[in-house]
Image (cartoon, rainbow, N blue to C red):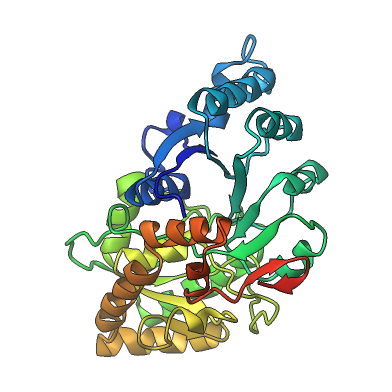
Length: 353
């Protein structure tokens, strides 16, 4: 495998937010690629489009932004184009880049739920690899796009970004979920608040139950002041385990683990390959099970050991350098890509590879 690549990373770098999302996955991926010895040119496509608008009219800068991406790839003579969500990047743009640079590899990584429009899926034909932080749909997707590899990759947590801050543990539990008061996360938050109020447990809630969201270093400080973090996602069931989930989790869960806080999560199929229950993480089957374990861990202080083990395991298996190394190994058909905890979740044309 070639040792040094020139990579253009087209992602959502949130330049206008003044560092509030410094721990975003775009920056972690670029960080990992650089650690592996590659040149990385970050292209914040939403910011570029916004700055290219005519009289501030929404999306009026799309053409200029797409042309700029083409010229950047051309001028750098990029070996690889990394795409994040890339909803503003036209398929025609990718085809032009491939025409100008016939040997370029184009890949996409994605962490959200696949509820996108037809244009998003149409571009998958242009990808050499589609990396997804959820293994559930990979096999079926691979049947639809013959030339594209579909692979799981874990949300990254890296010590350069997510770290413990030595603060007094003034809060017992933290719950963060941008649920907009409209999905199952709100129902879970109500149950959690009622339980904590009843048991006199100090709970901090952000971005749910009409509480403000929290960003930047304030986010890390709030986590570091807390003993236990509870992760609950919109595709989790309230009263039972969602058995259809497969290695699906959130970047927030990775941040909790990396910041050295004891993390509670609904049981997730396949996640036992990454984290051992009651050693590096605490799984629960329903709210009642969660609250029972929550009370127990707070009473016996076992959360301290779980937090330490979880952070160590996270930095061992899901750091930026290791995850991006896997991404490139898979892209260039290196057999080393078969040596990771999640390596079995790679598909092409409906078959495991």
